Length: 104
Image 1 (tube, rainbow, N blue to C red):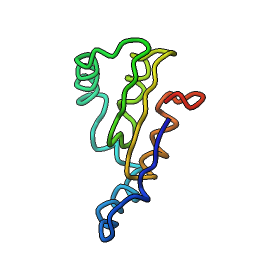
Image 2: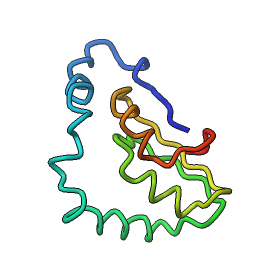
Image 3: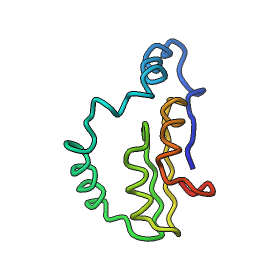
Image 4: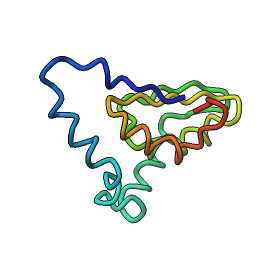
C-alpha cells in the first residue's frame, strides 16, 4: 500500500517538492543503484531483521528502491507501507515495489 501525502503540505513549500515531481523519472539514475548502493540497501534491510509477517512503514520511500527488498523479507503475510510527499515518486515506486493486491 502506498500513501500520497502530497496534499498535506504547508503553504509555501511547493517549490521544495517540485524537484521531486519533475525529476521522479530519472531520480534513481544518478544513484548508480546496482554498483554502489544496492549492497548497502541489502545490508541495511538485513540489520532491520524483518521477519515473515512483519509490518514495516517506509517514511519518505521515494521511488521505492527499498520496498521490493522489504516486501521479500516480510513475505506474503507481511505488510510494507510506503509513504512519500511526492505523488510522482509514488507513481514510480508502485510498479517496482512488488505491490500486489494492496499488500505493499
